[in-house]
Length: 88
Image: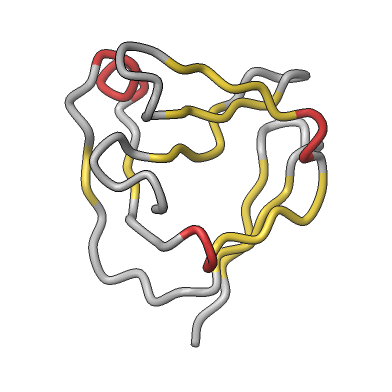
């Protein structure tokens, strides 16, 4: 299985995805549209936060189900939980 590593801009928050990435999508919510974010859907068990979990800030709105995670130091959006699939 492929392994992908990523981080926020300052490197304080690091993570790994242990999953096959076979589709990239864009979201049309106001937050993602402004960032022109590309994303893939993986189960939460395939995402491992390697460092900086205590530095993550969470932005929640509307139904309080969708959660967007940001580095509290540099402000970069790292990942999110979807309202329609909160375990992904």
